[in-house]
Length: 127
Length: 328
Image 1 (spheres, each protein chain N blue to C red):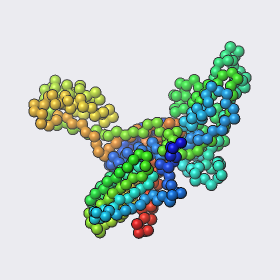
Image 2 (image 1 turned 180 degrees about the vertical axis):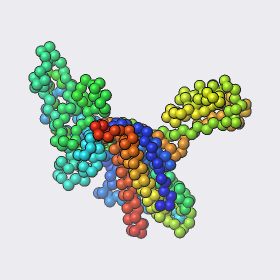
Image 3 (image 1 turned 90 degrees about the vertical axis):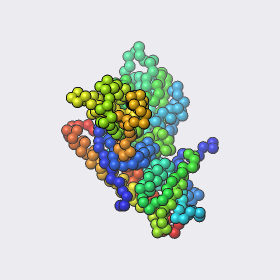
Image 4 (image 1 turned 90 degrees about the horizontal axis):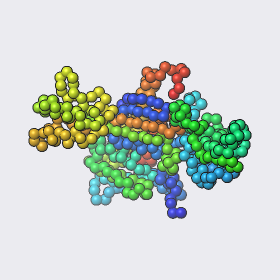
């Protein structure tokens, strides 16, 4: 009766005009801000966080998944200088990850092809 | 790209229902993200709506509907033989423009089994006429030839089974089950029936270091003791030199138990001495093992999870771009 719809854990709430990602600059700390990403969980958050840690212009990065029943994550980023904004490092991190995923996809396809060629005689062989 | 990693893949084995590979030169977060996506976010087909016309069996409607939902549904692309990715062939039903359902977003299955009719058709001998028989997934008739229930995981399972498919309910004399089931595309986050994997795990590649200097201070008996104390048999005594060496298949069997550490602590002359043999987790090599349910071939599951991750990252990239342009 009170159970929320399961699909709301990954679909944006269009009726309430929910945005995928919002930003609020930190008032007390310089060059810092928090991104709120809706309808995401540790899968993407940890991935982004670890990639951001590789960037030397990032001074601090951390994420929180506040409650398992609340489907959003808060990602806090502080950059080392005011020349680089948190949103810029986040954008480059996302691009790097997309490039890594593409690379992994081609590697995987090639590895599967190679294995199949080496280990199966071809015609007349079931998958 | 400034700080991009370039991961490597080495396939260990591929079978229709299972794939094992080694992923290296990448971070735990990538391995974990892939694992989580394989379990929760790869789209598959599963029965989602059931209309009952007749049910005089011993199980009630919702029980049978629940069982039907858990049957793995295989989509075979026109040019291949095994279970493939259904993402391109079907639309998620929420995005489809049709009123309720259509061939573009769903597949209909019909099941009509009447005990009395079936007994006549299969010419069961007199003395067996009142024995119950099993309604299985083989009795589901699909309206789309490319989509069929996955009855068995492998040929051996098919040979070993008494039934023609996954058992749904057993019916007896006078019982009749007639229903129409609609299968739709979804992800496991919504309901576990849409999960394409039975198991998707990874373990860390072990890094085994043998401190030769320290080992040379051990007696042969002590060395044998160290080799025997490991339940996963990662060490051996080299027959020629008598030294402790790492065995060939250590990376396959390593389970990172504490036995070695405890045995070494007892052997050390002082507690702060270096260990003779250390076993650690590698931080950038992972041994993946993905086992499917029969709905999709294991390598298709991995490729599909990579596609889901790529699409997710592109979508986020676009949203970030939009946020940037709107001036935050």
